Structure formats: C-alpha cells, structure tokens
Length: 105
Image (cartoon, rainbow, N blue to C red):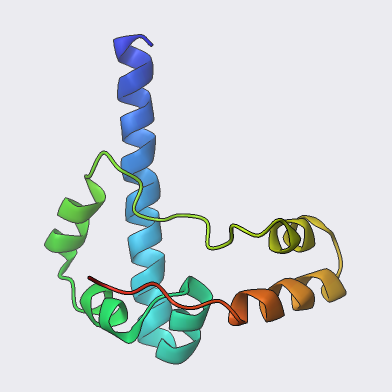
C-alpha cells in the first residue's frame, strides 16, 4: 500500500469518526433514549459521548481506528436491512432491539 493511499485511508477514518461522534452527540442531546437505542449503547457510554467537549471530540475522532462498528453479526438482520420496504426495516428494528447494548468496561 502506498503512503498516499494509507494517508488517504487514515484521513477517511478520521472523517468517519468525527461524523459518527457528532451524530451520536446530536442524537443523544435531542432524544437520549432514542439515541441510545439507535446507536445500541449503554447509558454509561451515552453519558461520556454527550459530555465530550468539542476539543475532546476532535481529539477522539483523530484516532487511526474506527470508533463505530456494525451492530449486527446476525445474517438475518443484515439481510433484512438490505431488503427494501417498510416490513424489512421493521423486522430489522425488532431484531436489533432484542440485542444487548454495548457496555463500557
């Protein structure tokens, strides 16, 4: 992998991280329970994310590791999300609601 390609990839990771963190904060500030549900996070993690200063958010986003991940490992959920239609979206929401939230250790 060339240095330019790796540099571009790291820049894209940082951009995704910042977008994810800003979206998470917005969701949590506008409707905390819904934001926690949509993101699949615990109350403890929601507290940390919602209380980050902008400088802390930018520093955290600058990580070379993705801060977000797919919430589903189950092919049924992925398949339901990939299907079009309201029924498929409702089915995937029900499946994801049955999963536990991430815990801060």
